[in-house]
Length: 184
Ligand SMILES: CCCCCCCC/C=C\CCCCCCCC(=O)SCCNC(=O)CCNC(=O)[C@H](O)C(C)(C)COP(=O)(O)OP(=O)(O)OC[C@H]1O[C@@H](n2cnc3c(N)ncnc32)[C@H](O)[C@@H]1OP(=O)(O)O
Image (cartoon, rainbow, N blue to C red; front, side, top):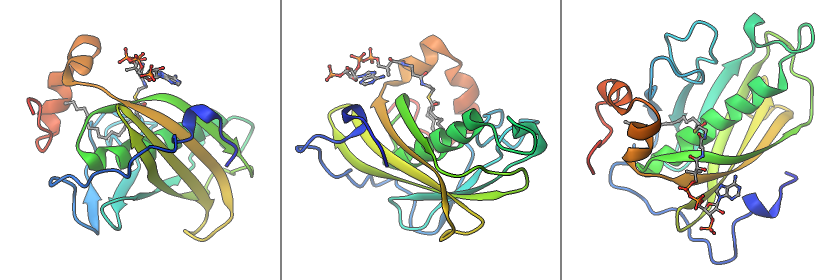
């Protein structure tokens, strides 16, 4: 992965602390919002990612590129692929059961991804330093050991619930996300 210093953990970054609420290995992760472009089942043209954690520390998901996701004819749009990376990384940082948002997302596009391709996504955390989480993801074509088409590195920043209340609609998310502690 080609990455900048902004998405590289500093030497004193800590390994992510295991949270008692982290889902156990093998858990399928529920969507955090039904209208989410990344994981919402009700989004008409979204990515419809369904994810699981194989080990309580990383997240895996599949994304099949559809007609609505094209850039060049019959090829996935790069921004859509970046959205898939953002989503799976967001799901992986939520394993720590704290609210984070994307501050920076860097993406390497290694192979074109035709419509109909299933990308096998995987995301994990490389370290935590204060409010900053340093994360990484990859998307492989056709199988979990297939050729890597996309890689991403990200900096996510921990926020508080006021972030969603002030700028968005906290109640709408909380209404669907019963396991989320709105007043931790
Ligand atoms: C009921 C609610 C439930 C919620 C959770 C539900 C569960 C979720 C489950 C699963 C989710 C999966 C799906 C997720 C989807 C993917 C996530 C997205 O796409 S999120 C949307 C896009 N992102 C934004 O909209 C952020 C917009 N930006 C901001 O709001 C602010 O800029 C924010 C919060 C990122 C930082 O603002 P500041 O005021 O809090 O903090 P400052 O001081 O500016 O930054 C803190 C540190 O970070 C560095 N920093 C900030 N932005 C940076 C950047 N772009 N690059 C490098 N460093 C940056 C700064 O330099 C500073 O560093 P120094 O402490 O001084 O060392």
